[in-house]
Length: 227
Length: 227
DNA sequence: GGAACGTTTCGGCCGGCGCCGAAACGTCGC
DNA sequence: GCGACGTTTCGGCGCCGGCCGAAACGTTCC
Image 1 (cartoon, rainbow over the protein chains, first blue to last red):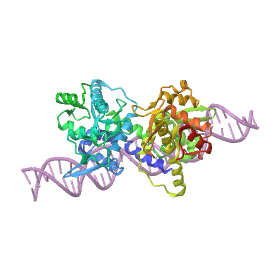
Image 2 (image 1 turned 135 degrees about the vertical axis):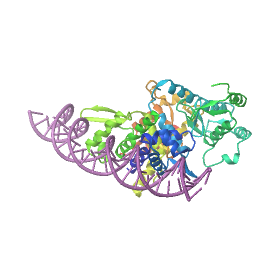
Image 3 (image 1 turned 90 degrees about the vertical axis):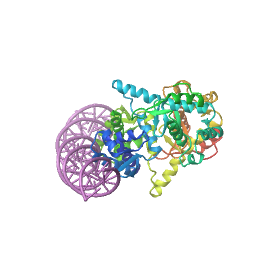
Image 4 (image 1 turned 30 degrees about the vertical axis):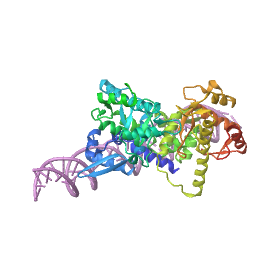
């Protein structure tokens, strides 16, 4: 009985245009300031502040105060997963206009899913890892011993990756309808690729673009030719 | 941008105590009448009617009119999956009182998840199917040729099970945090078990109880001893 | 036909919520 | 210290949405 109230409370957090826009923006995994979000959702800063306190209190977001700024981001990967689930269940509205259409194409090709890679790029990497027996999807979803070595060779710190959050996690992709690699390993690969200049963010969106260097690197590293 | 509005609209459907209670009740997979739901959520019939039209319009529910009754149920298994996802993300509130506690134990042991079996029973069946190589979880999630024969021997109609909805689908269990069998095959097993008198509903809840006949049947059929 | 029953529509009430602008607070840089 | 800036608090406004009871509609049962 009280379960219904809890569900209503959770849904209520997202049942507002402005708050929903905030959360979707935060799905890029970055920390935003209150002002940025206000501008993005086209509301007054004071309004944004009120919404943020609600989302904070609801446990969907966490904040980090730095000087006169207040950075806010999704509370944890589970929240991101929840949002991905929800957006996946939306009735797909056909894109209006060329701009949105090309943006959709870029997102489908490669994007970040909270803190790891998704889209065709994310799936391709996951497939390649599985094919080379670095990742094992047969029982559970985890790295093989050889896969762990591979991660280490890429510069991963085995200790840093051993947290409460699972190393590898299957994350469902709503454009590909396939699973791709999440977890701390997925996050590591995403930041590593970015640091190496293999991928670059497209504008301020969640879409990313594979650089020429990234293309050759992916080919030599995992045998991925093109998307 | 409009994506935020869509998400808000979807969440808004569940952002009401009464509507959330309706949806959670409908998670048992059965069709309820408007009056039953009104009584269950403790609101006037007229209020329930208004909520139902909203949920209908929102695509979460479908209705079937029969005489002077209006039966309503979840629109499709995807909606059920969405609701399961959401409830799984709720902060688990400790049960208050002995009644709720025992109810929780029964639910954890065996329950229906929309139209198939979940809880320890559901997971045990899925594990047994996998172990006997009737179900294959290695790539994708599907029945092996031998598994299809097994289903047929249980009385499944191969034609009836071949619909747009997948035969086997991995469904995440929020008490066990493991996957169990959904899809048309999962639904078939659930109704078959019920028809055979192997399981019986506990009161009007989603919890089910394994009958003595069911216990011996599960042992001979899949080697499952006890939960 | 008439009574009982499930359902729906309508009006009206009430509370809550999102929004803004103004003002206050804190921090940073000069 | 002072101004600029990001953020928050507070009133106040307006509207939307949930709730009910009364009445109407349709079906079923007798």
